[in-house]
Length: 363
Length: 269
Ligand code: SF4
Image (cartoon, rainbow over all chains, first blue to last red):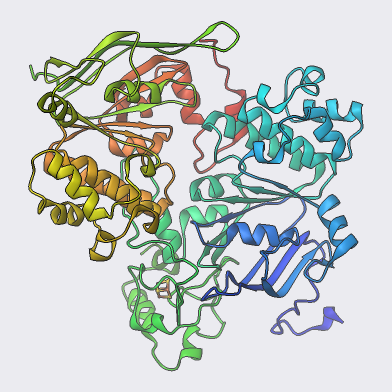
């Protein structure tokens, strides 16, 4: 049936592409007492063996999204939409089935390895608790690059450095043979050289085990350098989803561009930083239109009431901005807001100036 | 020859370890900063960069080595007498990663600045100017530290340091805990303040890209020792030391492969 479906019909959310390991569709999460949803229509996918980054500042919802993949929601949260892992809906799972999902499909690695480890127990016990045999525990420690694993299994957390402990936690995550690894700022607290080691390790593990990796970080440069695809989040929404290289070379959303131009780099020429004014919104800030409007250098009056939605880009990505250039042939962005085609005017203007679509995105 | 504003000569600090042995946190660290200059001290954990920062402001007493500001030696201990203590405070002020450390939780932003100004015999009316200077508005002026965002608290900590009218600001990972967009605002603020007041900066950070943007000269530290020094642009563009090269290779950029970094051999220190 799906083969005969007209191309213009959007795929129903219930039928994810067969290759998706994790597929989140239109996930909206409300908390009692919060003025706006913590997550608002978040959609994302991770395929087996794929490294996908989720980038955002504090309050963007990136960690909440990752926890949702585990079926973990804040107390009192009301969720709608769909979170499918390997074809199974996670949102409605309870009891034994939820435990099973958390135990063997998905593993989460946090920023602070010490929080995951019992300080008085030996490292080997930590791995055995997670389903490894004694001999396997030693193998696991060796596979995450810990020297002298025979000795390490008998050590306690205080005898190891932060970088070593993060390797132990990753070994623990692998003990359950997950297919999806969620790394929530897992290398942010580590020294840069240790971070590089751990990231190299995760890349190897992905290749060896076909692991999907959802990599949550505040560091856009790291995300773009390390991942296949990147989702940028702001105020509980995905504002841009692109391949990593497109994000570097032609960021489409003004927030993504802002993050890139305000992040210091080590390039040969020193480009002055251009800070984004204001600060990331809290859960008490509400938005009748685009949530970025107060901080956006390119905002127009229309943006105040424009309901954000992903606008497909010619390269297959999407950006939730009223003024991005939609994929040719798709309906104009502005049909839903009435007749205030400011964005199309700007588009027409630039076209008249002889610039091409990609350059408009750089503007 | 321009006289140095800050001269640190052979600063060393060794800590005893529990169960015997010792840890050399800083070994013969020597540097100078010209008036209005900006020196970066970069390194990873255990490099000794924070120990050096704390020795500068007198929070850690060096085993040996000297610190002089404008040619006058700083005593390891705070001097006796109010005038001498105030003069010492006006030499160097420090901004920490966590501004809670230096802010009184009971005082509003305005009260905090007035207290510092009064102590240094400056007009309390300058509090409003300082708040404006660091970009805090009337709403924040009446707020206590816990009611400010992380970026606002760091702005207040900077204003409080400026209230003393110091010649040198030592910043220890002062932007490390901030969101990227807020970090850029604080870096811009520091550049403006440096241009307007001529205050010199000692900027201690693990973040090479940030140091590149803030400083003129840089020291690279590893395990208590300075392994490389020079103009920031030169050191970060064509490093001589293998450790500096490793640090640079660890910074993610387009086309980066962490496996390359992991393979970079490093001689033992
Ligand atoms: S919709 Fe308007 S305010 Fe929002 S990002 Fe686009 S230009 Fe800026």
